[in-house]
Structure formats: C-alpha cells, structure tokens
Amino acid sequence: MATCIFCKIIKGEIPSFKLFESDKTLAFLDIQPLSQGHALVIPKTHGEKLADIPDDYLTEILPVAKKLAIATGANEYNILQNNGRGAHQEVPHVHFHMIPKPNVHEGLG
Ligand code: 5GP
Ligand code: ZN
Image (cartoon, rainbow, N blue to C red):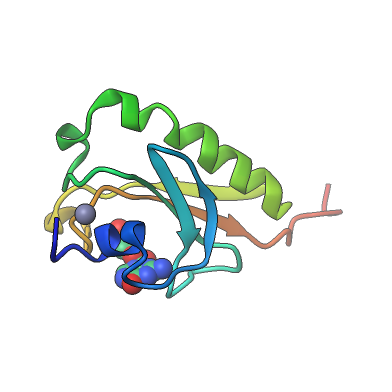
C-alpha cells in the first residue's frame, strides 16, 4: 500500500534497522523502543488486521519473534499484537512487538 509506512520500510523507501528478512517476513527495531531490543515482526504483504493476512504469511512470524527474543538474552519478554485503533494499533499494517525485559530478576531465586 503506497502510503503505509511499514510497506515503505519493506520496500526500503524508509530506513530501518533490519534484524531478519525472508520472502514473507521482515523484522526490524522499533523506532521508539520500550526497552533495548524492542523489535517489530511484520508480514511482507499489506493488511491492517490479522484477519486481512493470509495464514502462510503469519506462520513464520512467531518463530522469528521467538528467535529474536532468545537472541537478546532476555529471560522475560512480551509478544504483543494490536488490532484496530481501539486496541491501540497506531500503524495499520499487521505487526508483532517483541519487547525484552531487563534481566532484573536474575539471581533473586
Ligand atoms: P502499534 O501501537 O501500532 O502497535 O505500534 C506501532 C509501533 O511502530 C510503535 O511502537 C512505533 O514506535 C513503531 N513505529 C512507527 N513508525 C515507525 C517507523 O517509521 N520505523 C520504525 N522502526 N518503527 C516505527
Ligand atoms: Zn503496509
């Protein structure tokens, strides 16, 4: 979609720090990270909500988010995905947040 910022990131028209790319999936750092390593994982086809994205584009996303979480070394993290403005979706292109938490609980038993 021509006006979509994430489609522009996919096409390289807007710069991003890419973490992973395949034919169907792109992962990159969030521009306003909630924590160090906050990543977004998106399908490389435009759709606003999960229901708009073919399943074969969705199946790769969770394994990619899992591997990124492991790569950060975080023991704790959130995977979040918002659908619709009322659900706090700001960018109308499906995306999964992977938000690592600092390892503050390490050594506390
Ligand atoms: P939402 O609220 O839609 O679930 O989250 C959208 C996310 O996209 C936000 O965390 C925001 O910081 C991120 N974002 C918005 N525009 C850009 C951009 O141009 N580049 C990158 N890397 N992230 C963006
Ligand atoms: Zn898009």
